[in-house]
Image (tube, rainbow over all chains, first blue to last red; front, side):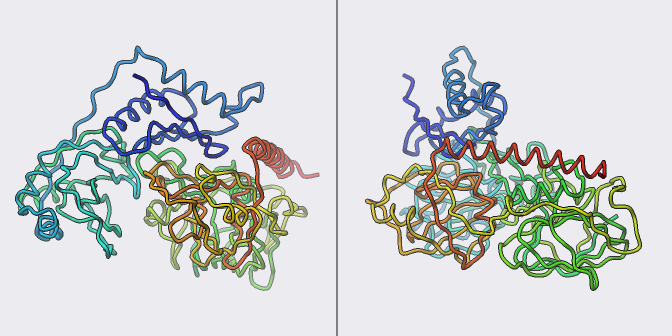
Length: 234
Length: 328
């Protein structure tokens, strides 16, 4: 069944397609599939979020030779692109990320375990057992919002956000998990850190992850962390 | 050839059109806050149009020109002098090698642009030379210009309407800033946002009938507006969606914020309005303490005004290019 999609003109150069109003893996999967189709349209930037896609465009490019309404023309093109049913679906990319949990790398692990009524090892096991969906990127370049956290690990954000969260920190914020690509201020609970670099503007693509990717975490020890850190720095 | 920053001013950064196509990986647009002023500064020095210029905020920098250069100033009216000679804005000026340009304060407005013939040619990051101060992308990892910075300038031919001379020289003509700078601080056109209908009636009247004061917390990310608290009919729980420049959000404080050039790419606050794209440059020129009034606009009206401005800008740029190449 094809869900009803709401179209909303946000600005002269922006049209939002809304698929729903809540955070949900299935809904987000529809968003990613739609984004893949919409990206075939020319002169358009597609920005997927949890349950919506923003289409950013140059109004003059979508006005047409007759000087029509660019929003109407784009809306018609978007509907047509979403109706195409013969497109093959592409299997999502799977990314495995090494994470050193606890200790100096995850200063909030003990607190998260206490809050969830688990011991730290159970937190690590459950966090690393899940397969996560990258729902969207935002907050900072390359910051992924990951769906799929074991509900028993959900924990609210900290009351006192940190001024500086180290780059690579793997964190829990509510029912989601995320990874800080750079040293940033942040309020999520830090349970581990990856030595992998998530964002590098001089690489193509600059972001390790894209919306729609699948992520798994592989627990590593501090020694392997340091080895990999050196390797990635090269 | 390069330009050395002697004093950085209050907040100066290199800006061009920005990075409009990387929001999906969390990279915002950045770019010049007053787009037309940036474009016209480039046009006045005979640049092709997309070169990076210096965006100055309230107090401009002092710069040393190692070699002769042609520059232009646009945007907010700013004090500018080389030695004893004061320089006019909205025209091209020839500065001989060794000149020290001292930019001062702005009589009104908030942002001035200094373009140089050849453009500031720092290495582009993701297709743009803009500094994103928030995401730390661009020249010197996206920080504002600092004393001692050496800014490379791209190659260019001499401008024969402004030939080399011993001293400073200025074109005999310039642009009327009137259509491009909002001296009268006119009301700003506002479209309804997704959650406009959820504002209570008194708040709706205040947005479109009252006035706001630009807060001192305003920056390239957002203009924060002080007002008696705006209220929703009932609280809204929203999930994050893509955010964009011009969006008027209402955080729980009840003080609206309008996202600007360095808008985050996602946001979850109620969106009560959208500043018409054609008026964003005007809002960018309001400084802390200035008054802002809004007037309602439909999307069609906003699109028509935007198209008209783009045509006017294109015509003016063609005219400038011709007049720079073919004197009288």
